[in-house]
Length: 326
Ligand code: 2DE
Ligand code: MG
Ligand code: MG
Ligand code: MG
Ligand code: MG
Image (cartoon, rainbow, N blue to C red; front, side, top):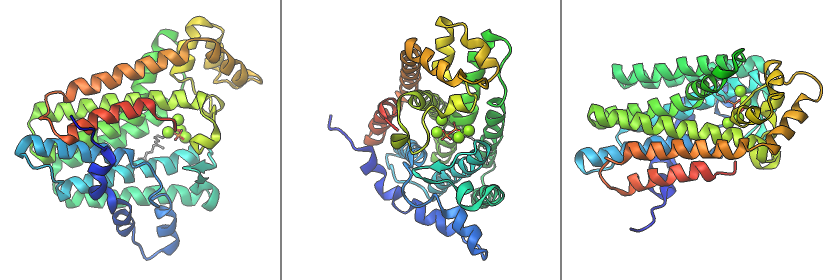
């Protein structure tokens, strides 16, 4: 059982991904093209396209013993990264974030108005690429992602009055804001592989669980990583008023957190006190355990896939999601 290298497996398929995206972003407005292309510099982790390509290849192999990526699946991988990036350009406007991926954010370099338009422009090009696939089901599935992203971001702006509903609200929000994109893009490439309904659902569930694990780890890293490691400010979520899993778990031991959660850490000293409480509680351990549970669940869903290097890489990806440091 030789160790596979997930990066090597997708190397050929992802090699030209950013270059190909930049080609799609061509427009006779040079500044619009420049802003829209800014994050497609090949420096991103390309975590999402990697998952999509590996699911596609694993199911292509499962269905006809040939893993080679289809052009339509390559398009979905590109569209995945484009939707993700567009949402981040808008997210940084909403969060007034001034760094992203270790560089100044689009809103800092070009201002909010152009950032909003650049995000819209990336989405409009992604829509055209999708339309060119002439596949209703794929278009339908990826439209759901856009809807979920907006709803997830909106859900995050409110705090649940009822303490007992907070955790399920948080998980639901995490699905919409983060996991939906991974889950539905996995489903889209599984449709294009010709896999049957059971395997389409398995691909969806792999993406859903991996995505929730990914967000739980993201929320954990916000407490334990530094600005230098993340390429964005640490403890940023509390400062934004967000009660993520570590805080929600900590509130079981420190009920005084509940009032701060309700006022979204807006009083002087709230952020520092909440941070301390999380550190003194087992909130971080609980969050890590829950991420592990979702990663295990992701693996359970792909266990019926025919064995292949791609399937083994999908297993490793779940591990990497739990162990990442940024
Ligand atoms: C990252 O969240 C953002 C996720 C989704 C944003 C969705 C928007 C709706 P974070 P970080 C803005 C519009 C959707 C479009 C344009 C498709 O937790 O920590 O703030 O990386 O992430 O800033
Ligand atoms: Mg943000
Ligand atoms: Mg945000
Ligand atoms: Mg975050
Ligand atoms: Mg993030």
